[in-house]
Image (tube, rainbow, N blue to C red; front, side):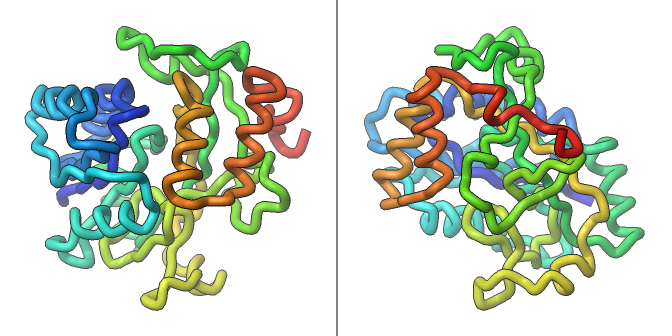
Length: 269
């Protein structure tokens, strides 16, 4: 069974994540990587650097997306990357700053899913930050992201009464769809599964073939020019996202991640 990964990578802010991302998912057992590079302009210096990084891993970009970030366009590219696959094939959908954690290697895990009739796996985006909550300017290429960002927190808590959530040890995190059959359709942002009309499935339908456990998705975006990145996404995609707005306010107020506000309260503690 071949495991296919699809992602869109924004070169302006996420270039340092690319080697970590590729090496991590290859170590888990991903067989095929479909990567679309997104750049604000065709002459952005990071675009050529990103191409060179992919070349190092013998990966040819599926597409080069020039222009401002827009969630619907991102969704279109994600769909195009796997449209040639059969509906029963396994796809791993992840953003470049999302490192999904599994109990075993992917091939062993997928065999288990197939035996159980499972068609998709849910994760919760656990924000990984430095031990002090400070936002480092750069990543250290010699250290794993898990070593550089050992602390766990939940920025999803800043969003007022989030409708959707993934529960891990009593804490409600931003939901993410992880491994899934190609036939499973995902919402914008890959947060939930949707029906053919693009509407969320009822809870009964959603749970029917879902894996019983919810796993952590390490969310490694809290470095570099993160405030500018969030502001740029809001501007480019015309988003008035309560989560983004509150994250920006949090960073502006404290100058770092404040664990008293967003620290992971295991089992509600």
